[in-house]
Amino acid sequence: MFRLRHVDLNVLYKSAKEGLEIADRMFKKPWNKDEKFMCSIFGYTCSSLMLTRKRVKTAPTLIPQATQFVKRTLYPKMALRSAFCNHIYRDRVLKWSSEAPLAIPKSINGINDTSIQFCFSYPERVNESGNLLCKSLDCSHNLTHLRVRICSKNLLGVSLDAWKLCAKFGETCLSFTLVEDKIDKQSVPNARTHFSKEVEAWMMEHKFVKEAKFVRLVRNWYDASDSLGNSAIDRVRRLLELGSSS
Image (cartoon, rainbow, N blue to C red):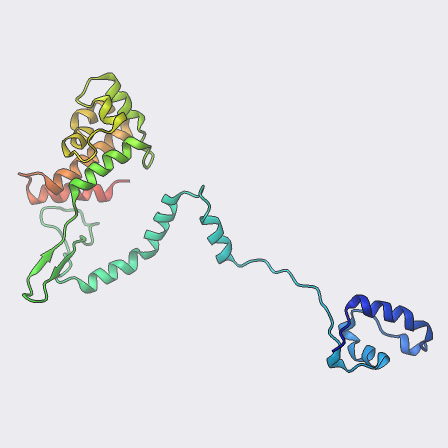
């Protein structure tokens, strides 16, 4: 099948227009408007004439643009995690509420904070016996991992320099090798030294206020999760402190 491009049509038009009557030349480009007329002049059927048209550029939609942007290595991953958590939070709460084997508590005895709407827990029933099976996190592993993480670089605006200076001054049990060399990464006693009251007091005295509050927050969370001799209400208060921190 013979095909004509726009450039071919232009050549044919310029070649034939002198031999055409004035009335027959009353057509103009673009050619798609005069397709039938051109076909009749040169003896083609309309189906044999393929008109080439410029490709229309369209802007990409928001989804691929956003996807490309967030894939850049410079985009903060913490911001992505925060956005994702906010996105799934409501659905996860509803799912947890519908599957909870126990009624969601309306309040906590001994705590007058009315802003606490519920507490997360993850009990489930064993299919064979129907008994409750409570799940728990490995708080010791989390504590040691957090110590190594904070010794590597800053975390959530908390500066590593506070621990380095504390170790360098030598006024606490925190040694420089614990901070700089991160010796015995899985040691819970070393991690507890990292977040001890002594270190907290030193940081507060030397104006590392945010870091001191972070040390206290982590220590209270671990004590609530693992230490002996604490009352239930005291454990709850310490855990709530972790949840309400900013």
